[in-house]
Length: 221
Image 1: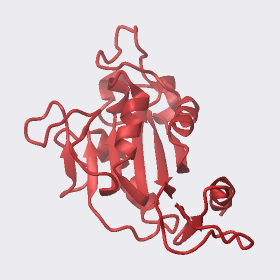
Image 2 (image 1 turned 120 degrees about the vertical axis):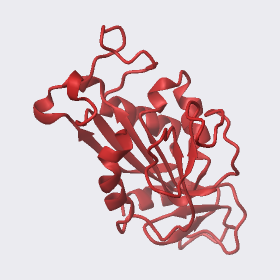
Image 3 (image 1 turned 135 degrees about the vertical axis):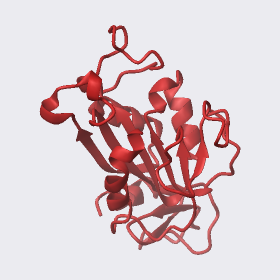
């Protein structure tokens, strides 16, 4: 249900020039009966009609998906950092990691009589932004956007038709360590390249010593 509210915005951003042409399938984690797109690979603990799995240990190889999407699921898991790292490993370099999550400013928080009993965490967008950056420094934030209800007022009876969330979209920046052909992308360095850093539509190579510098360059594109 929640994915329906954000589908057009996600497709608009992830099809923009910020992403290189990364082919591959989409993984929808916690999809329920309404995946982001038809044909997406789906994982949900509760819906028997889709592939089931342990959301901390998914049965897929590293770098398998052009996009990993999850709507209103991460807040139900106790160990946020573990889930983020597991889901992030599945994103291809240059691919999208998209999270749509309820924002604590606009819905009943844990302990409130109307709170969702499945929730283990309440976040505001900026709190989650900082958590994501600490946990996954090899991802670049493409979009972090408030999606409030009309007038900023939560309508419990009409919650299925309004947004009360935030949208967080990131791009996997580094595939490392991986031995690559060629030398470091820094013009005055001839050391062997051992990292790839994915920029907008192109790949930079880096030795071990200069990866942070080249990542900063990519961030400022």
